[in-house]
Image (tube, rainbow, N blue to C red; front, side, top):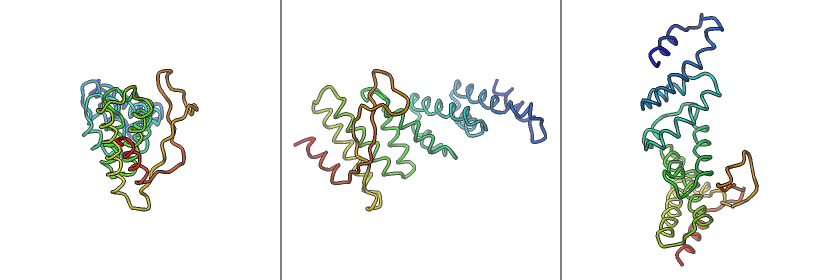
Length: 214
């Protein structure tokens, strides 16, 4: 199917009629679907960025990200340039993290942190680790030393990331748990988290880290 789709695409040019050109998005979707199925992620990525239809491109991008994460292809996810799609990638990863069960693996917060760090977005990387640590406070059913150590590690990672940012930008939105539904409702088993426009600097995160152990 991939060879047939590529052959069809090669026959379409600027002189082709609109009736023919309208099949281009479908053909790229075919390339994407079958490339994903055989694990050819480079070709799947090319199919995503080549698809001219915004809806199809968005759907394929979401599936590509999920498949890469579920198949432990974090390095590849961080290496793909995602030309013109970086903001879409960040939105998809954040939504997956926000609605995720923090007890399950893989952790989309870790993926989000790695994605931001690979692109030198250290402030956003810090935000992902801070939010993960805060969700553990609200959602962990046990508070044993293993959980506390993990939280401490995430706070420390957030602090380390913020230290790489220009001092005047060394702050992040304060995490506030809310029950207010915003946007599409999550499944009943998931909790909705919202960031409010309150800020937290290095001192605030250090304080959270201090009270975690003392």
